Length: 122
Image (cartoon, rainbow, N blue to C red; front, side, top):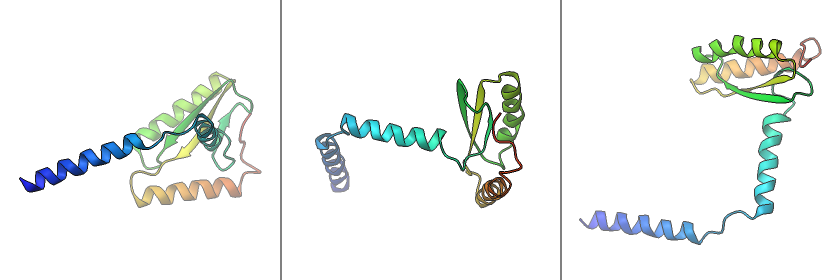
């Protein structure tokens, strides 16, 4: 019973501290949004296919060892071919373990080394 009381007191004290903490200022929120936007859409290390100046940009988070991700890749290629104003940015998200991390590293290293010969965007 004492354990439960201590646990509840700790929970409520944490909640009151969270309420007292000031949220981000509007300027800070805008800076955070700009950082996220730059990381998603302007990262030169992220593979990209499709239009160079697209009207619509899709960001695809993928794991090279994920079977569902592999099924999506041909669909994204078809979208880019069918709609010339669309671009796809690929963001490796290795969630299936160490082999996924290795696959992502190999893919990004290969792209970086052959960027002069690999078409990036049309």
